[in-house]
Image (cartoon, rainbow, N blue to C red; front, side, top):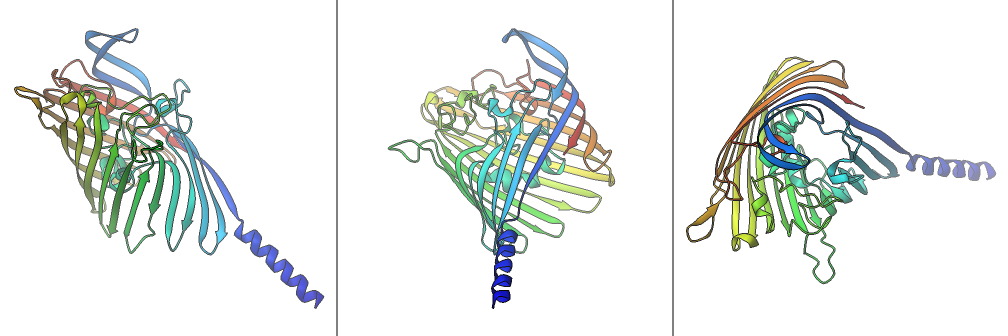
Amino acid sequence: MKKIALAGTIAGLLSVAAHAQSSVTLYGVIDEGVQFNSNAKNVVGGTNVGGRSVSLESASGGLSNNRWGLRGTEDLGSGLKAIFTLESGFNLNTGAFGQGTTPFGRQAFVGLSSVQYGTVTMGRQYDSIVTYVQPVTTIRYFGGSLLIEHPGDLDNFNNSLRTNNTVTYASPDFNGLTMGAQVSLGGQAGNVTAGGGYSAGATYANGPITLGAGYNYFKNPTGAAGTGLFTDNVNGSSILSGVLNSGYATANSYQVAAAGGTYDLGAALIGVSYSNVKYGTISALNGATATFNDVEVGFKWRFTPALFAGLSYNYLKGNSVDFKPGASVGNQHFNEVSLLTDYALSRRTDVYILGAYQRASGTSSTGSAAVADIGNSGDSSNDGQAIVRVGMRHRF
């Protein structure tokens, strides 16, 4: 009997130990390069003094944003795991935190993951556009790039925005179909929906075809620091910084509907995506709504397992916003062509050459002439801008 009891005790202890298996992984990306900008605003001491300025600089983050993070799991048994992620962006040249000086500005969440039932996480997270649509855009199948993102990253394909105070559900894989939804809690006493929003999306992969769709809706996106989607960082910095959309800063809502797909032919991959963006009930424009439509086409060719080239074309149209008789803003057009060549020196290290050219036309959100702005690099002094970058990226 003593032997049986002892054996049972040992078995129980081993079972607890197995269930308590855990791991923490340190990971990150370091991307640095030399970047040429043909047309940037001439800024002296933080003030735009006008005119055209050609710049050549050592620029942090190009093909990928620099980051480091900790990812952990604990096996709780029966296919259930506790998970967490803490991820921080940074500027390699200065050491400063990214995402508006937010220490863990890229991601910070904890949750439970079940093989059978899916995953629930809580914290600061990516929205459904990033999770379910980004995989079928050039941002993902080119390997990521600030210079390929859509003007102003209006549709958040390049995850310039994160959602604070968010509860997210992601389904398990149903024969290639994955789905998810999330709700962001505004946290304001007496008005539980103020500053909050919701998001949903799905991705379907079957053989060479991958399809993705997503939807975001957020209220009061330009609230006080940390309370609005556009001001989700510690310092309250907003993505509404250029004339492309800064005139819509008083919008009471922000909505994105997006879809896309890729077809993988082996050596070649072709992708198409579309997004519709709306800034609703803009107070400064008498409650008008501003709408943008974006279409992207991309082509990737793998010469060898280590070498590929990519070509993309993007067109963004901002509709005219008529806010009083005889007065309108926002009738904008943007055409951009980008070319990337990437060579892998190893599984973790690659070198690349990336170039982009953008031409803008029409009237901006502020009523001034539309100007080019590649990858949120800053408004150019006129309607044209070209950027070329030679860089190196290392993953760990």
